[in-house]
Image 1: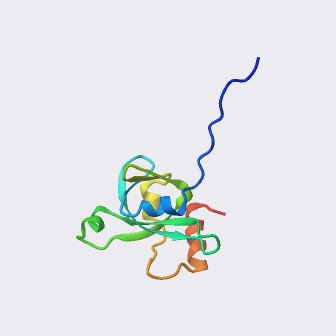
Image 2: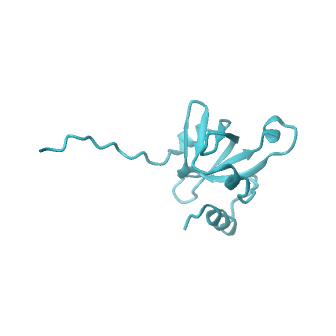
Image 3: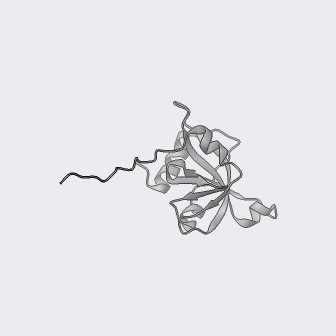
Length: 121
């Protein structure tokens, strides 16, 4: 008997343009709860592929009542559509992520700490 099932192609990571279009979109954690907003995208210096979403966490930061905490979230663990981005990480993991300053370059040591936080080898 012949196999008639069609294989569904795996979705790859978003392109630089797609990830950049997510800036300003709401960010939801794996359970669907809102956790913040996409603030910026860091791209890989070698190939220009998107590597990290910079997320502004916390409702207060979104509404301007207090300064938002900015953290990096692996682009490879995110998907976006309809004005929202979903990440495969839980709220507590995002809150415990190393804080970043998007006005400065991401130093190797800091990126290694972020990778360690998310279990990226």
